[in-house]
Amino acid sequence: MAAGKGWEGVVLKLLRGKDFTFTVTGVEEVTDHFRRIRFTDGGLLAAAGESLHPTMWVRVWFEGGSRPHQRAYTLVDPDPATGTFAFEFALHDGLASRWARTAKPGDTVDATVQGTGFTAPDPAPERLLVIGDAASLPAINSLLDAYPRTPATVWFETQHASDADLPLRADAERHDVRRVERAGAALADRVRAELPELVADPASAYVWLACDTATTRALTAYLRKDLALPKQRVNSLGYWRAA
Image 1 (cartoon, one colour):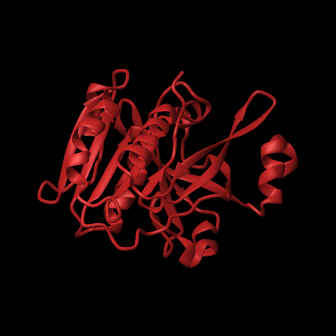
Image 2 (image 1 turned 90 degrees about the vertical axis):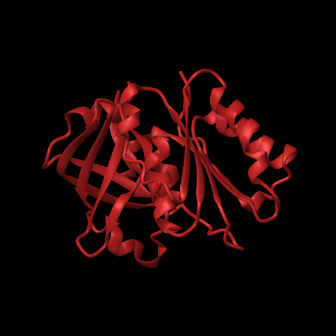
């Protein structure tokens, strides 16, 4: 499998990535810009065993040009008992979105598991501070599910009017959702203005951050340098690059 995937596939093989094939079982149009696709897991969840964790992602291979290219997607509602899960696609103009728009039951995709991980914050946070957008929504939901009794403040960047209907698993009693329309540095500016008042003690605060690469880098630097949060209290990952 690695030979047909260029240098990316070779590197993942050298890093002992494990390969699986997923089969589409159903498709759901969540909004006009967001599609949920359900799969059988090809043995992934049984192989993962106890290493299954919140925000877990896999590298999925999509055809493009002369060879496949990998994109990372978060497992949504993985069920080891049935060997099923879903991916949720924030639709745009990329390889993965083009595949997702036409996917139907019976279609298959290959995937490689290598690189994913999650370290639970210790001590556990009194409040989750979460920053993301439609691309990281599946990971945000899995994080909220993993801490069902922990209050959270979520800064959620939106782009389309239909983003108001995205399935953010927020409970009004425990979760303060602050929606920010995508416009330049609006998300970063809003976070810088509002987050400091929620950080009484940098050593015990916990921020989970996943949006576009530039915003993620800027806010990670701000959290570490300006607010003095320790490295282990900031979990950040750039999910996509702005065109």
